[in-house]
Length: 540
Ligand code: GLN
Image 1 (tube, protein in one colour):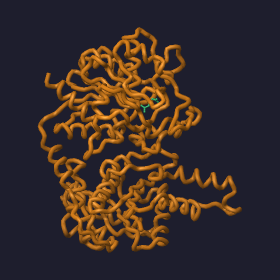
Image 2 (cartoon, rainbow, N blue to C red):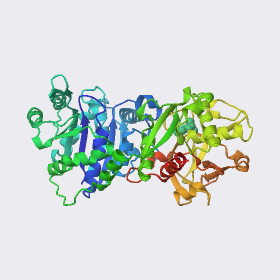
Image 3 (cartoon, rainbow, N blue to C red):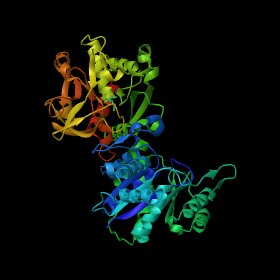
Image 4 (spheres, rainbow, N blue to C red):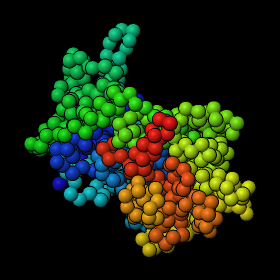
């Protein structure tokens, strides 16, 4: 039977609930348990797919094609378990669902209310699609005290009442600030946050205290006393130098041990922290570095390319070096500045993106990478831009463009309205923007003896997609004649999935997002190979 662990946050947002949940998952898995991680988001969007990365950071895509919160990326990277559509719900999704049912007359003429109808639906989602898991860790987005999170908190309170208090554990993560002026660690915000939680009927069982410095025994005692938890269940998490240290630090604080003790579960298996110890050591001590330039539209916001930044770091881990990311705002990148701005980089990456703004800067950067033989990696939009650059400068299609930027007679990249998934015909639309792209895992076949097939060491791959436009296959022969090979195609040969340049040390564009599948303990081969190529270039 699955036990449920609910993780809430207090005092401020961005305390690292996702990372704490993901680390706990690793520790429990390492002790031999099967774990599932879920995120319950209080915002009204049905999913984050329509939100700007400036607002909410990256949109993480699952294998089964859901556009989800970026915390699911943390979950996958630390636990190694692929998440699904059923692992992320939002207030929008719940209301959407309940209202649709109401319109169908499914509530037998009753008044539809937050309690019980919305809370019941939340509880159904929490238990949905769970079979052999030992633990389900559910993170509640937002901060206790927010109006939006109330139905979720009420639902998990009811859940524990119905499912059994012994089978449900509440973890509350709070901030314990350090006041420089008085040289003191303050517990009051935590006390208030727990008070708020208790006022809605939830007594936390474990309090994780995020702090700049270690919390002295006296302050721990105070938290234990005022918040009604045992002193061993006041767990500190002092800021770590690298996120890879998190599982080590939570284990040192006995988080996994306390969780098992709560549920009265025994485990003789020792936690294996070696992989994290090795990675932490490497990341903190390596002196070898390589500079990668990321030319994109959302570079100013750290979380906008979260999985990508992580995947590049993983590529560094497999080459035993540190990847230094140089973020270049494509909007401000004038062709005349290219040389200067890209002077110090040994690899250029153009990430996924939407819309025309900033594209000319990206195209100019690609031209520079192609001509100067600098390793180039184009992801999704980045591959489409590489196609446009090549069409303009090598095929002499001067007005080559994408139909994403308006109708044109030279759309080398065009809107796809139909494609196949597992033999079924799928249809795209631009009428509704939410969830209507080509989303999730699709198979591609790789051409033998190409760079890409050597990197993957296979000719059939499956990668996650998130796009509405596609390189026009009708141009294939023209491109290949000039040295740009379509080295990966969809199984029906209609959709170009990968392009590469014949006479270039490393110039690859992919229509999918390999970054979603890269993990610190299992770096994605494309990122390992790209960083290796950049490292070789830097030695020239
Ligand atoms: N805007 C492009 C498309 O929809 C690329 C999307 C992306 O980079 N994820 O096809």
